[in-house]
Amino acid sequence: MPETIARPRLSAPLFAISALVALALAGTGLLWAHYGTTVFFETIRAGFSACFG
Image (cartoon, rainbow, N blue to C red; front, top):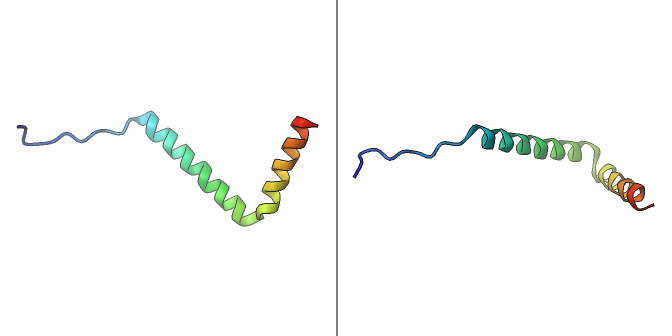
């Protein structure tokens, strides 16, 4: 039995993707807190209107 146990390493691409997702979620939360829900719902409504007429 080995004396030391190797820890699994987090790969660089996985770390970069995780950091980008976390940054996007934090940014969304900050914008939501700053502008409120109205802006987000209006954006979604405008998007549906643009796509579906």
